[in-house]
Length: 101
Image 1 (cartoon, rainbow, N blue to C red):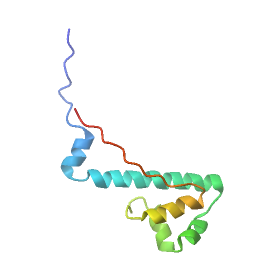
Image 2: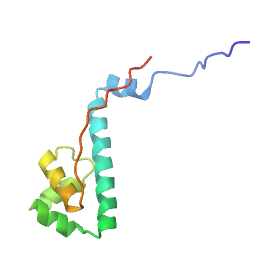
Image 3: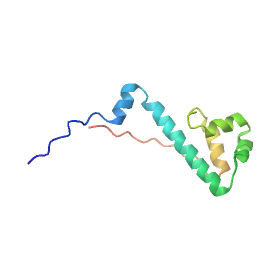
Image 4: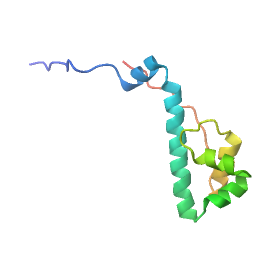
């Protein structure tokens, strides 16, 4: 006996994002959220406070933007400096997208 395919199965979430034209924006926000999470975790581990990050970045506004998960326009230089404060390096890589079947 053959299993029936699920009639309620639709397109993938990635297809939805692409159709809405927000795929790149959502990916950028997810990456920034991950960066902020990791930065805050390292700050706790290294007992670093935001004031030390602000001193390294040179501006309270820049510091606020680094920790703002919705602000995705931070420069690589800024993110690298923030990572350096907590003893980390910033690595960026290209990851091929999975092609939907």
